[in-house]
Image (cartoon, rainbow, N blue to C red; front, side, top):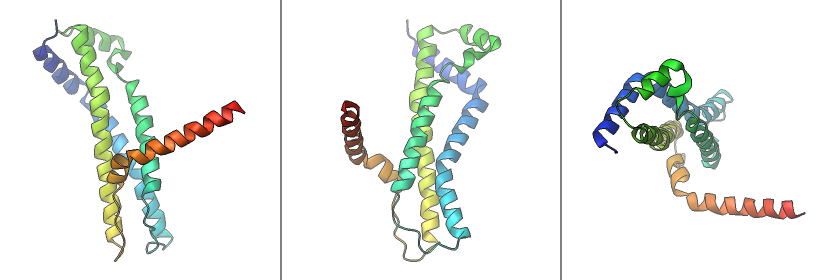
Length: 172
């Protein structure tokens, strides 16, 4: 029988015991998302090409989406990271909760938590992008966040075109 109180207790226990793991994972993800933006502007500053920044954010968005997809796939493998060691298995299975409550908590962390970290990383990358754009007077400021999350129609069209091309190629 599912109990929301036990579910909350499992969540509290997991976030307390594994806080280092979740913190390191989130910081790594945010840093990985921000890295393409920071490195591109750093190279432009070093090369003295800051006035010619360009206006597109498509390249950043594509890299960030690929990083996000890879992170979501990899983090789904960590859904049961507590079961890696014998001590972790003992701690996990001696919790006063049902298997459904434990599984549901890990599924929520894997699905919802990973997406929240991804959104936070994209927002921080967008903020860094905007701060660098403000360094150049008269530069057009486009949002990476809006391009990633609002332009899904474009992404779907591109995916369909690439799938059609792959189908044609596989037929030949």
